[in-house]
Image (tube, rainbow, N blue to C red; front, side, top):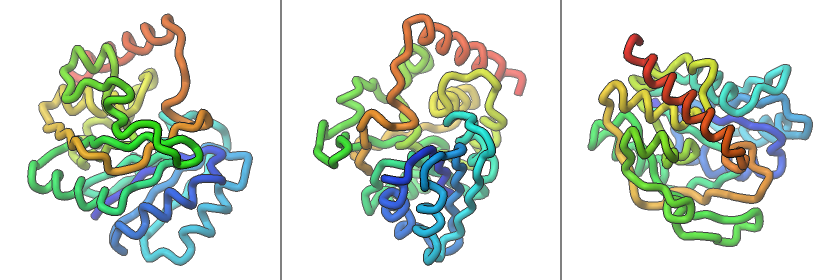
Amino acid sequence: MLSVCMATYNGAKTVARQLNSILPQLDAQDEVIIVDDHSTDDTVAVIKQTVAASPVHVRLSVSQHNHGPIKSFARALQQARGELVFLSDQDDIWFADKVAQVVAAFQRQHADLIVHDGVVVDGTDTQIAASWNQYNHNQLPQTLVSNLLKNGYTGAMMAVSQRLLQQALPFPEKIAMHDQWLFLVAHRHHLKTVVLRQPLMSYVRHGDNATGMQRRSFEAMVQGRWQMWRAYQQLSGK
């Protein structure tokens, strides 16, 4: 059984396209868990219409207040029952072989964290770069130090085992990034991370993304890294 966890916020223009790239890759026993972060547009209605005829079980929860992407993903991940759990943003486009490629790595390499590359496109689907990892200068695979200095593991291109998920949840109250936290937990517990070099999705960068676009000040970046390091240190007692 597979799970796909998606956090949405004001994604009415893109979420149907993303769901339509995901659902055909899943079977009836799989699940999609969507947590909407109190959207003020038609996101919820679009989701309901898009998934109405799908045999895949879709669970949609709508938050009464806006909590941000980290808490929305945490809420979705806490509901996931699949042995392999994919993270999904609302505005990307999965390639038709993404699920098959990631599942193959999961099974063949006994991986607990799988990350892959993506083609970078803008809001009009025009290609910006053939590789997100090159475009964003991600150094992969990462060590603990290199990850704390610059997280190169992007949640939208990530899948995790249920075993890793059980170690990572609940998320600490103060972490800067949920995807980085999943890597840090895998590292602490010596769980296997596999990096797939091939692009398996179009990663949309249009300036309105709910995740991945915020430019933080130097002080905020330093504080975020300190929070992640402190949370990592506390894992030894978990």
